[in-house]
Every structure is written in C-alpha cells, then in structure tokens.
Image (cartoon, rainbow, N blue to C red; front, side):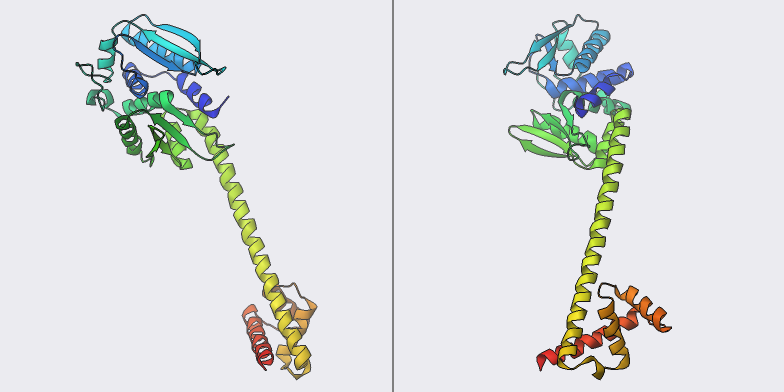
Length: 309
C-alpha cells in the first residue's frame, strides 16, 4: 500500500462538521468535475475515499447515490470506484460553487464556502483526495503534488496553500497544471493541515532519521577531507626535508629547524598539533602548533631556494 493511500485512508477516518464537509466536497468535485449537469459522477481508485464521498453526498443532500466498482478501460488490472447521483445535480453543483445558474464553471468558489480557516483546510483536504499524491519519504525524494485540468483551479489551490506559508509552486505537466511542494517541513505542515496526524508522525520520524544520516555523512566527509589535508601537508613537509637533506644536509640547519625535521621524519603521519605535543613532552619544552608551523614555513623556504639553485 502506497504512502498516498495511507494518508487518504487516514483522512477518511476523521469526522468533521457539516460545514467543513461541504467545503471538502467542493474541493473534491471542483478538482475533478466533468461538465455534466444531468448527473453527478465522481471516480477514484481508493475505496475509502469513494465510501466517504458516497456518505457525504447522501447525508448532506439527501439524494440516492450509487456506488459501484469498475475495471479501468486501459487494460489495467486496477479498479476504480464510481459514485453517481441523478437527483438535484444542478442544485448540488451550485451549492458547492462548481457552476453558476447558467451552468458555467465558476473559476473560484464563493466566499461563503471558505469563510474560516477550518473550511479552507477542508477544501484542501477534498482537493488532495481528488488530485493529490505524496512520495513516501523512506523510498524517494520529498515531493507532494496535485494535478489539475484547468489553470484557474491550480492557481486557486496554490493561493490557499500559500496562506499557510507552504511555498507551493505550479508547473505545466503535459496539458495539465501541477501544484507541488518540495520542502520536507512544508509537506509535513500540509499533512497537519489535512488532519493526517499518524502520517505526520511517520513522516517526521523518517525526516529526522534522514537529516541525521545526512549530517553524519557530512561530518564523515569533513573528517576525511581533514585527514587527506593532513596527509598531504605531511608529505609536502617530508619532501622539503628530503630536498634539504640531499642538497645541504640537516646538520647545517638551525637547532630548532633541525628538530622539526627530525620529528617529522620520525612521525610522518602526525598532524601539526599532535607533533607539537610530542615534541613538548619528549623535550620538556613548550612548543605550540603555531610555533611549529612557523618552523615548517622556514623549511619550505629553504627547500624552495635549494630547488631554484
């Protein structure tokens, strides 16, 4: 069972007020309405969503509703659920702000339908049930989308989503309009908005795990980069010391410079900090990392001059 199915199933288990249910129905039908005032016909692939639509239409408008299962027409083994009503179709569509009195599609719902935050959430819930999908965060990238046939509905839904600062965007996909959200925290906020609380817990657990895993990987990469840098520095210093040894001899160096050379050859993989501590302990002196680095800069200068000559 997909994550999208789990989210929609959870939404269908929650009870809401009649006013919210009307807004939810509007969101669903406006996102999937086929221009027909003779009958109200809705379809979906989710059995629980179909049952919810059946019960909402029947209870709110008191009409006879037919719920049936059909095979999809494209030779797929999948089945769809079709909800059909032949009574009060025009009245229902006008009440849900889908069409006007002249049977023309209304670009945006009337204000009375979305007069509160809860009604807006309900409308988004219905729109998601009709046109939405969301990737499982465990198996793929963070992505939520709702696909619409007409631009004005896509723009309207985007505006509603962004009232909650979800940073949704619209792109064309073939001949349809896709409203989508990519940011993981925004998708989690959307799940809260549509009352999919169990899905929120699942999503947040996966998100925290992936964030922690990414942070660990970044730290490991950073640590490896530091190790690589230390090894490169050590190798360069040893090359400089070998140049001096072959062309001049270490005995001609200042005692402190010579000491740095000998300890680097003795401890070829030690970092500057580690080497400064070793020298301090073994010689009962106090040399800092900065002081040791200064000596190796001198070694680099001497080696460079010898190479030039």
